[in-house]
Length: 325
Image 1 (cartoon, rainbow, N blue to C red):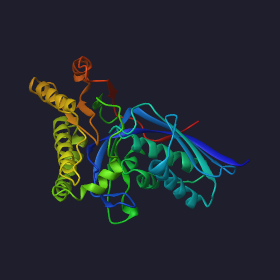
Image 2: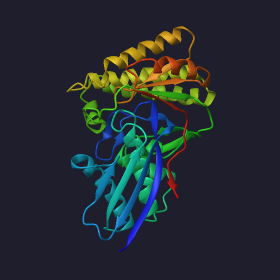
Image 3: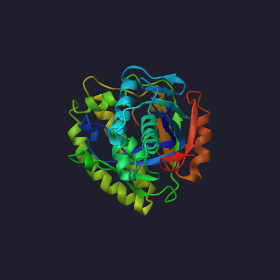
Image 4: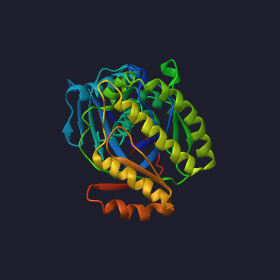
């Protein structure tokens, strides 16, 4: 029996400026550029085995077989690599996350980044990081950013070739801490893929796309200068802009829980007391608290005392996707 396999790991990322809405849904070309930080403690490990004896593709995520649209999405990604390698073999994919899946903590980003790197290695494809990021984007727009560690820019443009991720600064550039406040482990009622389709139905979408272009210029400068206040202010502004687009889409998307607002108010109160902390929220109810190392312990004790908080993951800038073994 012939088989070709590989195992890769990748980490989720937190978008400081968000990817929400596509210029091209089929290719997942983003409507706007975005900048993220790869998170060291949110890891996906994926093993891919292309085998001559398999009749169909099989995908298992966190010990659960995928079916329906979720399976079809992975199969389409596998097809990209089969086409590149000129093979027709089906594959067995086994993937594990060490953090909640589908709850707004970018599990699709780490998942498709790990799958991309594993497929390329398994089939012997010699691809540059830029090309890997383009391919990862076809599975999940945010996955393009998880190919790299540290602080990453996802470009957009008129074609597939133009929409790729670029490393801005490595993980050692700056120790920003992200306290990932897990309020819910339940998979969100509307997946991000469906939400991206709805973005253009919001009357606020064009204004946000225009605004984020300005924010990205300021954010790149703030990261280069290690200006935490500006980074935090931009992250908060675009998180609110993105969720405003979600809430005004048709149909409306409201991912927040009452506890989400409670955490937001707590962050703002602590900031008034001199604690340097800002929030950002992806497509889900869980809150990311951006802060500096000197403020982590104080904020961590505060959060863990809240009965609504299920867990807090303390993350720092992490490495990019890589092959294991």
